[in-house]
Length: 357
Image (cartoon, rainbow, N blue to C red; front, side, top):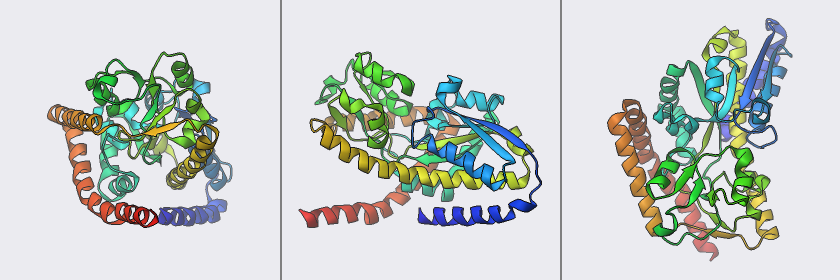
């Protein structure tokens, strides 16, 4: 991750030095976010990107960022970017699974890769090429837009002790994870972020997953739901930047370089910001709300989730060649990468914990 910062910082420095000789072409773009303008750190990435691009271009390339409170279409970012209403978008790829099921892999999937493994796949395992191949049909470009790492499994009003406790449960959970839960009897819905707190508080839903402490504390879920479950469904949630291809192709090469450099820099920042934010937020949550109970789903439930997920992968791969291609690519890279993850990260944490006990 440090290498990303060093490379980005160098590129930015070079671009800033070159700014006086750039052609002073005036470009004005708009970027639509799935999130509200105040939902940090998600909203921070596009806002910082816009600032960087404007500074690097000497004020000639300006991107106006609009949150969901402005455009009122939180889950319509792909359509608005494709249609040209906005030149750019910032969202999450699994929201478009109804348009192309293969898009889920460019965000995260149940029991998939962690963030380091997924970054390796994107940049060194063919992931970027497969992502663009998938989005070519929409005539948009897609780039990584910031990873949250492992997300929490959600806030629940009641404890989950068995598979029976899931049957009839009303829960907000997107992506393939929602389909996994649906197989287990959960009534799944996908509610925009601005309606989540009220829906949980009024009993419209019984449970929801959002992100993790850094984001959840802003939403206030810890005030109304006592059980906080650890994750299984989103081990490496990568957000995405979408760009209208026709608009991008019209940019001068130097502006294209500014844009791609800034995207990579803010993507790295979001991962770090979310991790640090969760450290501080959890410390505050457990102090101010000591009755929060952190739980892990019982083995019986996790085994059923894994079985349902594997069934879904097989079903989609059998009928969708694009899904199968990306799935096989991720599966092969994960098999290779997980060996190193176990040797390095897992064994270090396991060993250090044993030494402190």
